[in-house]
Image (cartoon, rainbow, N blue to C red; front, side, top):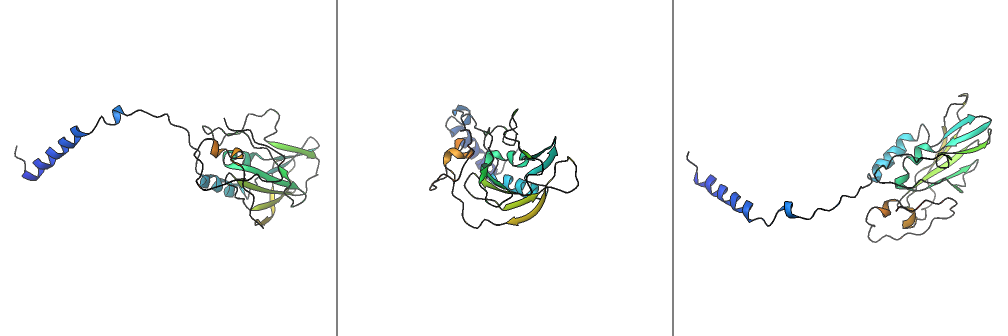
Length: 206
């Protein structure tokens, strides 16, 4: 079989490069892979997709009014706070966020006490619930005011009453409040201060 001069030179160069490589990847020390959280844009898309059906859900059950935060709790790995208020726009309450496990970033916590799932109020106590999600970098979502659905019995449901834009920049959370900073490198040049008020704390990521 005959080879052209060009193909022969190319072949010699390729063989030379192959055998001149030092050690190669086979000899390189392997580093253990650490789970990385999905990009925040995925969580923001989830938040927007759930807005119409409700970031929270009202339910009438056993002469009580239950308000579920399940949709937002699935996003807990990228949230620093869930701010809400009952029958006002004050956003003066905090719903507790579960500890983030980056291996299962969308899982709901095992919670026999329901502390991370819902709050329980007197029957028909909440006429509206105002809510805002705060991301791990301190940025706030829209402020949505929900009301209970009409004539749905004990089914879980929520209807949008109004949507508001944040009137001012939110204070940014401290690194300990951010699940991302426990598993990923900090963002250069950013500083964080504790948001106020705060009545619910997040367990630190180990």
